[in-house]
Image (cartoon, one colour):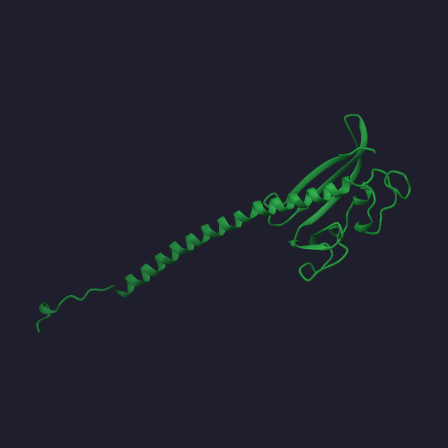
Length: 170
């Protein structure tokens, strides 16, 4: 048969297939980058809400304690051994290890998670670091104590949530 009578066969050349695969890879890679960014940023509001709740809990706990130390009846007496024994606002100053007194499998070291009032770690709050400071302060002419709680987590864009409260004498 003469060459002119051969029917041209349809299909793609190897170069066309390779170019198509590369283009699809670039397109899907772009989508993956966008989705990864969106999913990462979607988790941040939840972390911020958790950090705020942790800060509110610690601040509420500290400021609900008596103004004066019941052991000495003075302002900021000796600090108790651990959070379960804290009996006045000043005991929270410089809170160590997030106030944890025990560990769990999810929180294997003291302070690797935020902890409840009982000193037990809350496994779902791993990576939250709590810092509490209490110092004498004056507000509107009233001398009292200013309590400040900072909660940090590496997943937060701002990295820190800070709350402050003023505790007046009883």
